[in-house]
Length: 475
Image 1 (cartoon, rainbow, N blue to C red):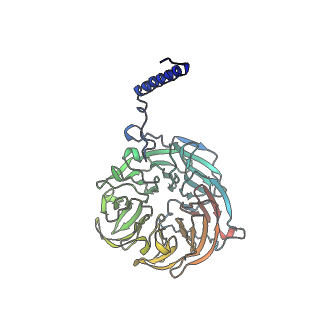
Image 2: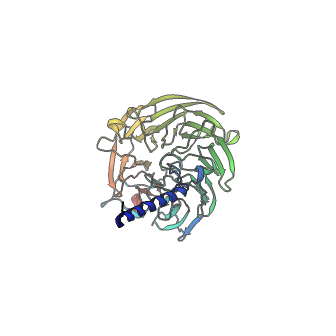
Image 3: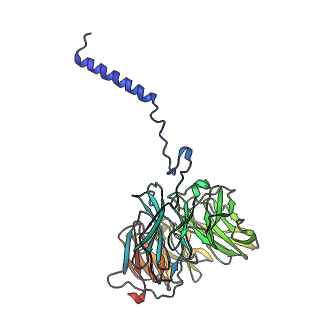
């Protein structure tokens, strides 16, 4: 058969293609590719966690001049109960025209709440452009940024990045980033002291949607629930030296819940609700770093609220995604304790919470029910601790708050709904008493914990943080 020019060109193209394919295959085109797996951001070969130069980045913008002395020094405030003890009279109703917003700042997408200390606001943020976790310091009164301290880390959006509240004392600030990088700095100037890569150093597994555990500073120690090779660790705040480590013999994982100090039976302990169970670790003396009691009866993968521990040995535990709640009773003393389950029920059958930890008013528990609580979903309810399944009152079907935070201050209940509407109510053991409400921001997912000091409240939605003045005298 005689080949025409068109046939010749076709044959040449086919031959060239076969040669190219052969060369491509001989070079193993996928030999340098690594399979992308969930949770393996910033990991090297074999899933090894990459080194992060914690604290390497710093930028100063000025100094803070303030005479303010009020503090909201950590998650849920000084007493871990979301109740402010300040005596500054706060507004019952918003002034004409709405809340008095003093300043506003844009943040990376997240739900990290602020801490306040003597006129300074400290918040964890993620800068998507710089690909960096940042601890940012602002003036409480006017929102001027004072400094930033952080480190480079490549994160993918996971319904927000930063989720934790810094712990602050006169000398130190302790933070935990989205992938559990712990950073300790000087409070006044942000000087870096030490860092800890929990994921790398303890082979810890980061929870779904990144780390939600807020750090604890107690008696000069950094207390972190690890959930890898170690259940909990204490480190010296000044040096970072390990003071004790609790072996994780049951293989529990880190949850979003935060550690709660509790004194019971004459012993101070740290109570932690992990993915796997609940445990109490001795805080001092001969019991320091030793498990005092533990139970796997409460075991849920996604736990955000902290344990609520009462003086009589009752511990209330709750979580979302159908977990409902459990009530434990701890008995014993002097290092010998027993744990029994008093109540366990589904979210539709009593007090439960998906994200926020209930507050206590005159012995009664106030909390917002989760979305799977039936007709009372997302409503604020009041229950008596003698029976967490009996709802005394609810906010009503026309007043649902979603996953937003709430706190008590000046005998008032401040509740932030999903859409950043702030409601002022009168805490009561008999009925829901609403005083006023106003939408502070136009965003959504306003889930970050509230902070209040010197009559100034700092709150946020998913992308914006604002400061509002609630002091009656300054309106």
